[in-house]
Length: 458
Image 1 (spheres, rainbow, N blue to C red):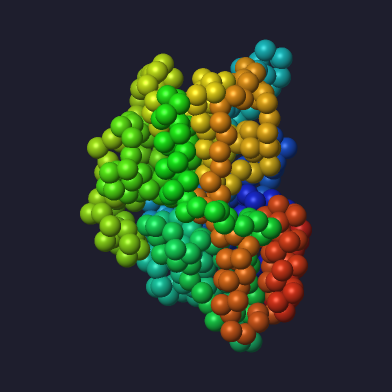
Image 2 (tube, rainbow, N blue to C red; image 1 turned 180 degrees about the vertical axis):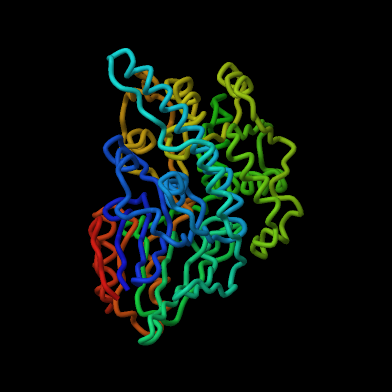
């Protein structure tokens, strides 16, 4: 069997791997590139394979950097089944619809610019109709259920990253014996609220491991809830707004959960909290639907962990705009998490210049994104055609990340009682992947960092 690396090599985004037995071709993930314009241009390039020849797609989770090119895949001729856990495909349905909406809006804006310059118009990467066709191919599978597909059999195991996220435990039988391959997808942290810990494995022949935080630790002097509480209190005392750029899935729900605990403990100022993201609102409803996936703590702490009296959903555009005219101190949670799109950009445009305000970042920011630029200390940023001074307090809480840090990645790897033949280090910036490879090599693992388009034979 041959495996081709079609994305997430040297980058944190764009996960995509093609498995070819000679009889059957399947994909693991089909993610979108996110980050700088140079990186996102890759989304418009042709796939490194013929989509019409692919028989199935196995999806680790719903994040756009793992699922975001599925509608493009379908548009290009893919007609196979798309396998994922129940929660993953529920979330992917709303994530991809939102992504298509962004593609359409961005293309409309770009074509106005092109028209002014006399250039040819561009077509969107994909549209709502392509998402609708993709959803027809969804096949929902429960965790720990064996699925057989031609020469493959596989299981989805809980990855502890976001709701429904999975490691793929894949067995391939080509007649000369069975090989076992583990695709980590994104590995979550241990002991975080709402979701379960990542699954550990004892044996495998080959392992594909993500390396998003392969060179970094999340450890902080205080528990993350305490840090968030202190930031909320400081912002309230300044009379400012707390702006939280947040990913719609998992991060938003964890923040709401943490605030709910503060309110229950009677240790929260009289602040309104606005969830200003239609996508996050839809995702939160899916979280409410899948209580069976909560960890024991979430099931026992609150009967309804996402129902807060002080929380208000702002679905309509005019409601979001009104928040920028609000003078009272409040908390605004909005997407996108990397500040590349969505309503958070409008709130930053209206709030970054004000020293009373605070912006707290709670997740990963790819190279070239607005969030990364702000975090790296920019004094001014250009956004939406305007230059904005950065005078608000800029904070970061590392431990809210949904990704394992390098100690937890090593912990996951050391779960194998026998060393796999090879660990393929993927889904990380080059420095991060190299750092994780060095750490695993020191512990006796045989690692390899693949290049884009590289093909290996198993």
